[in-house]
Image (tube, rainbow, N blue to C red; front, side):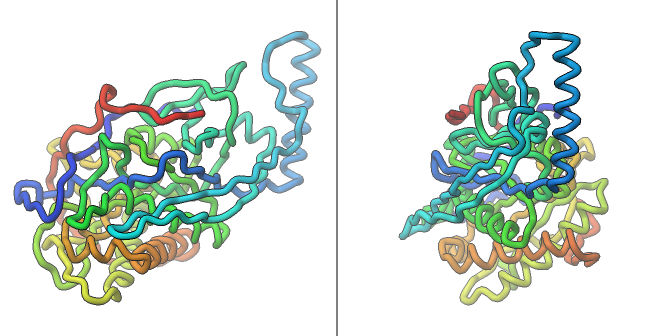
Length: 390
């Protein structure tokens, strides 16, 4: 199993309203992570394996188990060959929070099929409380996992997840890392997660396997987020955020997509996300936009000439960090508190992802000159409190 290097989150302190800090405008520090509802159940979006492949794999597992029993009778290794397929049905529930109307929406009832082999070789686990955690090993009493705060724990049951195509990363989470807050009270963490769930649903409807790095109101360290994507062998990861502080007025959406410096695939993904999001948001009426002069698809480098943000620096997976709009801009925060915005933003993200996976479009919005920026330190081990894993 790939062991991911550890690193603290590139978290930033909460700001309220339209606070301006010109010294921070050389790069965005606020990589939003939405606050979701505690106890939210997350359904893994994985394709059932081809039956012939399953039977072949299980036959090999059975033969191996038989040989082991013949040579080493009484060994204490868990036996996964006693069940061919494990079927789990679960319901994903989210809370959409606006300034005036928090609502709870049941997304979908989804039945997934997991083979015994997948359970043995799972890259991640959905815990009984709906938390997504990377799997390190399979012990005698359960799955050995990395917790959201980077600790090690053993989970006795849950839903194993094998390879997925897309990982969506709702930025921030928990009181320690709630992201920016609009003048209308909308928290970045909330809107990030709401958009992520809506995008997930659209991708699943199109037959694309997808999982979220965070499914509730709790912090997840950036190294754990990237570990989830890498261990699941995802083709891409999109980290969803909403920007702050406000850099100034603009005539169009100030969407910014941060990409991996050494990845042409990340660059193409970023160009498609920017193109689709800007085109979609430009259709929103009565919005006074904010944006930086160099807004677009860009690299942001620290003083060591590395990608500044952990969500593009750490993963081996092709990744981008998308700052969709400015929550610190009152006009845009008001827009974000509407169902229309959630629909528009999630449609754009889903369309961009499908275009990347299925077509050869290059996208647009590329900025040649990188920004120079050193983010503030992220969540420390002492500040991060793991959620209930069940």
